Length: 221
Image (cartoon, one colour):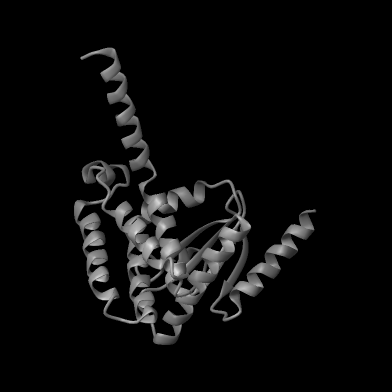
């Protein structure tokens, strides 16, 4: 094999590794974008959906992805299968119903990559926001969870905070640790993972969160 082709092969391996290393991050960002566009009934929602689908069904080897993120092949297959079921249903239902249905898939994404996302979240050296949502609860609680998921995504992106949405029905360890026994609840941690703010089951959560973060920033300055 010539030196030129060896260089090309090495480059392809590096690119493939980079794609796999960013698989979850890219997938979650794309899922965030689609969820927000869907909630707004934005005309670009289909474009966002197609981008998400391409990322999820990337040609990167599933075996390498499952190894990198410590997943079973069944977990990844289930995530893809549920996405396909959502795709079949979304054009037969209203945007509001599609938003509700996709939110379940969004939480499944969070559950699938929970261990990896937890490590990444707590290793961040930034102020970070953790929302405890739920995939199973009463109708009014689920509605509040969906609304506050959108609020946190939009707020965190606008302000530059790291954030993580957790399905506390499937993964309640952190909810117990931080004594937030109701969903939705939000906590804010500093760069050293010290608890700064905790707001539980409050319809005005995002306003209170913004006010308390502003107050903390003013105290530092």
